[in-house]
Each structure stands twice: as C-alpha cells, then as structure tokens.
Image (cartoon, rainbow, N blue to C red):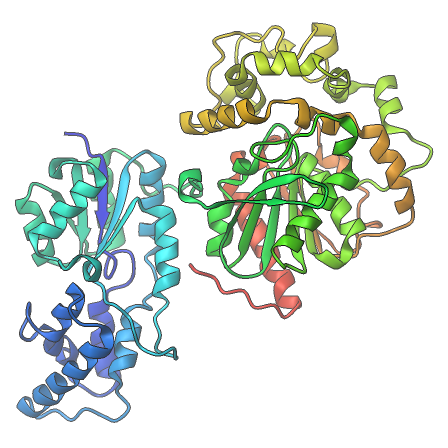
Length: 564
C-alpha cells in the first residue's frame, strides 16, 4: 500500500535527543549520568512528568511535584543535588535542543512531493514567568506549522505516547489509514503501540539510517536539498486597507521582526512570493506582501493614468501608514523592482533597504524618451508595444487564462520547451499578431507551477482581469516625464541587485552601471536562472536575500531573531 503520510516525533528525531541532553546535564552538575532520566521515569505513566504531558498539570504544577521526587530519589540513592542545578533550567533546556537539519530537509521533501506530514509530540503547557529558562516553543511551533499539516501535542489532547488512541487520532486528522502511514520515533515503546495499529514504524538511531528507511518506504529522495516551502494561501490571513486615493489593497502580513515588503511584477500577484514568505518569517522578519494595484483582490481602476509609478509608490507608503510602520525593506521583481527603486528615491525616509530582483535601476535621461526608443528599436521589448493599445492584449490574454498563464510562467531551456517555441518570443509579438499566436492550445503545464499554483493564478485573473496590469505598461512615457524631477539624485539606502543569468529581457548586463547612482549596492548573481527567479531558484534567492538582510540590520543595530 502506498505511503500517503509521515508522522514525526520531535525530541530525538526533529531535534537532538532529550535523553542525551539529560545525561550530559547530570554529568555537568556532578550527578550520576542516568539520575535525571531515572527520576523522570519513576512511577510512569502516572507520575507528575507524564500527567503534565497529558495536560493534567502545567509545568509550574509539575515542578512542585518533581521537586519532591528529586529529593526522595536523592535520599534513596545517597546522591547530593548541587545548588547549581535548577529544575526550571532543565525543563527549558529540553525545548532548546538544536534541530536535526537533515530531518527538517526530509520533511520538506516529503511535503513537496504531496505527502501529508504530522508532528506528534509529548509536550507541556508552559506557564512559567518569562526568563532565561523560557523555551522557544512558540517560535518552534511556528516553524512547524509551515512544514506540517497537523501538529498534535499530548498536552492538548489528554493523550500521550505510547497510548494507542493518540496514533489513531493522528491518522484520523491526516485522513489516512494506519497502513498508509510511517511513524518515526527514537523510543521503541512508542513505536510498539503504533505498529500494533498497522502503522509502519522507523526507529530513529541517526539521521542517515532514518532517512534511508523513509526513502525506502516512500520512494522519495529525502537526501537531496529540498526546495523551499511554499506558503499556503488557505492558511494565511488576508487583509485589506483602503488608501486616501480610494484604492483597496489586499495583502498578506505574517511574522515578527523588521519589516520586509515584497512587490510582485507582471503577470504575477502576491502569490509569486510563496516560496520566500516562509523562509523570511523563519529568519526573523515580518513579511508584508500586497497584490499591487490592478492585481488580484486589490482595486483595478480602468484609467491608464491611475497606474503611474507615482500612484504605485503612494500605495506602498499608504500601506505602511495603515500599519503604523515607519520604515521597511522593499523587495521587487520585474515591474515591482521598478517601483521599489522609485520608493527608495522618492520615499527614502520610509526605506530601510531596497532589492531589485532582475530589475535594474536606471537614472533618468532627459534626452532619451524610452517609449520613442522602443518604437525605433523594439528588440525584446516588442511585446510592450503590443500592449500599448487598450483592449487588444486584454481580449487575447483573457480568452483562455490557463493557456495564457502556462505560456508566461515557463523556465528557459529544455524543461519547458514546446513545439514551435523556437519561433515564438517577446521580440516578434506584433509580427505574429499576438502573444499567443502560434502557441499550441494543448500547451503543457510549466515546470514552475503545480496544478494548485496554476488554479490559484487563474482564479485571481478571473477576478481582476488584465486591464490593470497592462496599464502599467501604458505609462512608460509618463513615468519618464515624472522621473525628470529625480535627475541628479542618488539612492543611498543599502541596496541589493539580484541578476539572473538567463533572463533575456531584464539581462544582467543592464545593471552594469548602477554603482555611481546606488553607492551602497551589493550584488547577487544567480546562474542558470531565467525571469521567474522567485520560482526558478527560490533557495538561492532566499539564502542571498536573508544573508543581505541580516547584514544590513546588524549594521543598523536592529535585532533579528531567527526562528530556525
């Protein structure tokens, strides 16, 4: 029977062994190596420790009873407990063991391949006052909720491992039978009860052997570096604000810490940052991701003049105002990149840092009208000229949304090749008579999108259509005229330019001359990557972005608390 779900213990599987920690702690305080473990096991399953795991006692209540148990055991074994030993610190330490990163990577691989995942842990209700011994369980569970479909804590259910009912509960919540499930734990007693129910069990001895067994059961390569987790739109809070201009903005807001605003391009939405949101939140940042004007669930006015870069920057400033956020780092891809460079130029007091993903910054040139230049030498920008006449591109792109989006979100090279693609490009759209002319109706789903991703984008464009997004392109000349007031100005905020080797329109070469105008510029070049950087190379983008964010906040003496 095919495996459909994987259940993981926490202590000893996802994080280092609590038993080893307890033995090391005992030896550190001059106690016999097994002293702490023996006290906690004595009288199980009805002792204070086990009752706390069921939720019958909180930690503060448990500690009062444990104090008596420890004193009694010390007397019985003629052991002296030193004054340096603290029960509170012991319990706090149980929650602070470092993760087995290989196991975390395996969980993400399983989830990315469609398996349901579950944490099943014996845990406590932590009610001690804040202090140095306070565990970081809230942050840990936040991390877990990105990776797991279910989190079952013994103290919330009245059940604890190895009671059979808790395994039945896990299977029920996951919607799978025991035979379709694997369970990984480091204690034989916990596995025994699960196995009796028909669950396939793996005894965790070390990451490598456990991963080999998981791979054997599932047929999934859990050793390979996992693609970053995607944010699930159904599990996020969706918020709205109406600006002074009367524009309703939809946005996602998640996490704690310094603020990072992610700005999408064309034809995208907030959802294009789905693989960056969890990574940034877990790295210690508050992440705000709007559907920009014209997209998704945000307002989509019909007038072209409502989409100038001045209007779009005002939206971002108004969004910060509504949330009482003085400053943020702005990260933008494609058209979003153009907007965040303008934010850094027009609203420097609101900009802690700025990142252009594929989109370079170009200082205004009063002698060079970019729209006239495109008409004279279209090249790769021929598609933008096709977009200029209102109604034409809208009719074509909205006729078959699924086909349109399948065409746009394709990676370069053989992965997403289709018959005739060598003759179809952004350079000959007007000559062909349309963007989709020559594209087969049975176009395959691109490698960058799952069926769920494609369905979500289609749903969004059924709501908003293409008029608003295309109007961004119809303000090229007006944006140039507005930019003339910026002549001579520099962007002084810390900046990062991300270039993608195989982007044929926003080429790495286009960013060559940025340093004189962006003096605090860092660079990140991503190889073998086309235009859709967030989806094509999410791990490389996330790693580089987080490293840069941590660096600029450290230099600004702004604390960032990672949740990993």
